[in-house]
Image (tube, rainbow over all chains, first blue to last red; front, side, top):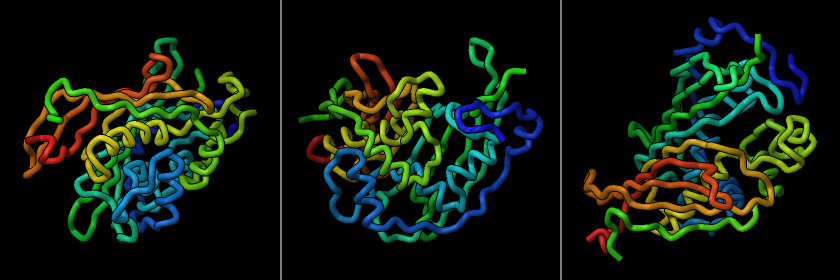
Length: 154
Length: 138
């Protein structure tokens, strides 16, 4: 295991590619008022009316709702410590406004892994996962997150 | 005000990114990544002695801009790339411009080019789709 502050040790490319299709446990998630209040406060915006959830909840709620944590995603991607993970991008789709105290059913999986190099030759894995949140049978939101898992040079 | 191609969204400014808010955010997210709450860790990887703002918080300023413009339930899609880190005490401004207006599923939607900039440098870029009010879209 890499110590904090180190970029993680080299990880076999085949092991990473084998993660494509890996399904997260799945589960349910309810966003409580206190959580939404603090989340909204962190963004510097006024509290929202009608129990609406701040759109930025689509980062952690889907991850936690599908039975994972950020730490468990790091472990799955074999990264640990400062400097080991970069954020490349998000594609978040809202099919209906999210609201507090609704029980969402959540499921997701790893959809893409690709070993690439930076222009300066440093290896990294492009790691993509998709999570969907359902209200009843209706799709409420879908997130596609792109992470960069940095690898030690050979 | 009519929403049409070329309409500029009123900017939303975060005057100073707050390290304490990053700590609260880390707790909400259960995010173990130390660069968001331990300045020693950011220094250890050569990023200076300021903590790195969470990507979701950077994106939240853009969401705030959109909600201030078209209401708290307006966001339909956020598609972004993060180009460079934002640090505590940075001042950042969310900006956007409408690139298309369409009727989808019974509502008028604006597709917008969005960005977050720090002193003129883009730190987040992408696109958003927003439901626009019937009064504005009429």
